[in-house]
Image (cartoon, rainbow, N blue to C red; front, side, top):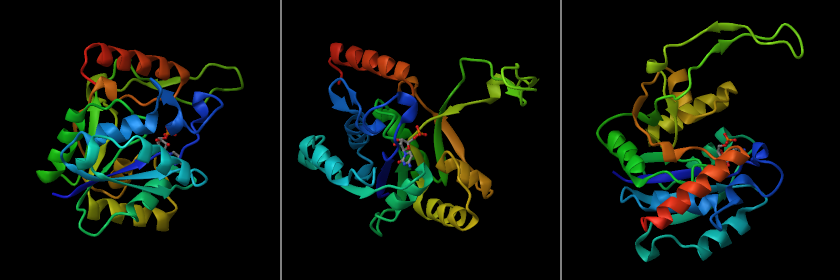
Amino acid sequence: MNAAAVVPAAGRGERLGPGAPKALRELGGVPLLVHAVRALARSRAVTLVVVVAPSDGVAQVRALLDGARPEGADGPDIKVVAGGATRQESVRLGLAALPPQVDVVLVHDAARPLVPVDVVDAVARAVAEGAGAVVPGVPLADTVKLVGPASGPGRPEPVLGTPDRSTLRAVQTPQGFRRELLQQVHDRALADALDATDDAGLVEHYGGEVVVVPGHEEAFKVTRPLDLVLAEAVLARRRAQDDF
Ligand code: C5P
């Protein structure tokens, strides 16, 4: 197995409030992106990390990663390429930068800086053992309601149903793929002008099988300001336990 990671990091992160692109916001004094790349570099499975930077920030991101070279000289190679207008386009541009020998691709959001290495390894292992598409997932804490449109502005939304919570998973990244499969679904989605929020969603759309392995609560995505508070707390606990 020759696994590479593609890290889409070209989003603005508007839900986090005004400021730098989300991947460059700091957590414990270190940009989210650097945490995410280090998390991937801890896995023996990953030989290359392709970071997809905001198109006006490629040089800045390259300098940042050079200055924070994770895990010394035996870490994976790191490449930086320019991203696109959507996450899907950014992943496609990352895929285009992979050398021919790569046969497994892990797509990991820069916005998930604290993913434990065990999750990265479990996803890579499941692909190596034969799955075409693998996502880490966790059970939901909340009950989820399916809702319809409100009857007018400020009106409550009608509930249409309650899916059985035990059959639901909140999915995380890294999502792992056989490279050929991921490339195929991205090519088809481009031709069909289809946009999905995650790569496994593309595989499902075209009828491919996707399997779930256990994720981890610390692999959460930093989206809103409160997520940064939680991420700081997790990091502080890891540092206190000398485990980081
Ligand atoms: O916006 P969201 O939180 O879903 O973004 C998930 C990941 O996709 C983030 O790491 C973000 O930087 C990345 N992204 C990207 N290019 C875009 C939009 C989002 O690389 N145009």
